[in-house]
Image (cartoon, rainbow, N blue to C red; front, side, top):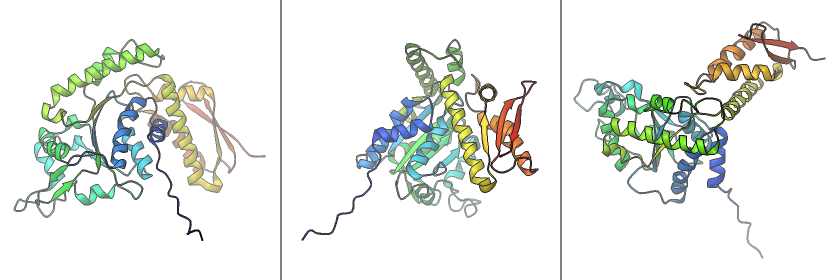
Length: 343
């Protein structure tokens, strides 16, 4: 008699599927995904190097191009939530003595018992999940941190070990470490001034601009950090300015997120949102720029759409199942919300 059926375990996403999932969430930077995914695959296969982190990445480029969003998207794909990462805002560690907050004060020092280290084994393990035991750590704007932080990270990036103030250790072998930086961003913007903006670039120009950005970024990195620190980084990824098509795709994503938010929060009081072409172009113009990329897009949608809609819902001016059409106002400086009640 045949034995009991063998349970079939669901297969993990292939490298191509993982790259596609990330590219769908982080628009306009496919080269970044292609460099990160192999390190995830090596960890899954059990072939990641021993005695060091699974991967160390330095993400460079102008603001608003998706550096932080990349790490959030990876957390969403691997763990199901973009919040499943351990983030250190390096702007909070600009003074040498503030670095002690990361590892805690040693025994015998004032505040030893009151100071809880930010980087403990428990906190590192807490951002992993059952589906993936890989922890994601983000050191945001690393260039703002005091030099003592980069010296502290030397051991982490090289040996995957951090010694805390109480002499206990934290292991980072099952971690991907991301460092983001705006180093060289101003020089990049000036270098690409003729091509920087909404006009689409031909493939040759795009490829040439990528080389320029990487070269400028690496020059700024070598001037800021020691060779020992730079040599411990597995991949330096330069993010390019976003083209108009990428900015449009990001705006579509933000509008879809707002529509889902309305449906999830209001439930049976929900309504449909219709944004005309003129209103879409208005949001694109107000929420994106050459200097800040897509950085202001969320704020523009919040001020111009979410807050006016909330005021109308709160006052009962949007009946359930109605249609709210978004149009550009006559003064071209704001948006009008026109409510069409259901028949």
